[in-house]
Image (tube, rainbow, N blue to C red; front, side, top):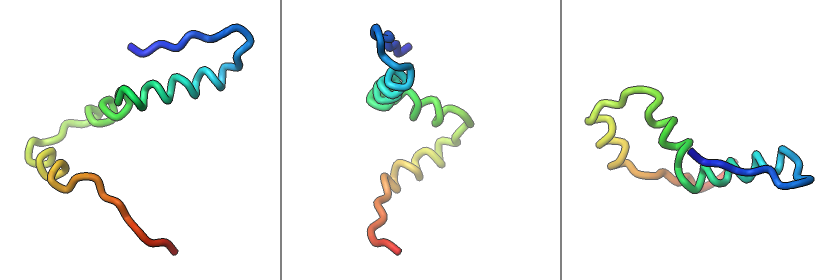
Length: 59
């Protein structure tokens, strides 16, 4: 469980931002979203084989 302590005189928004960065670095949110629904092993293999997709170009 990640924890961020509020410093004296620090706004809550800043502490929430620090918590979000910490969760991103640890991969906690990504893992929780991945386990939200069951993913079949074949789907998992297919997703890993595709890998990260980067789209170039604009409008």
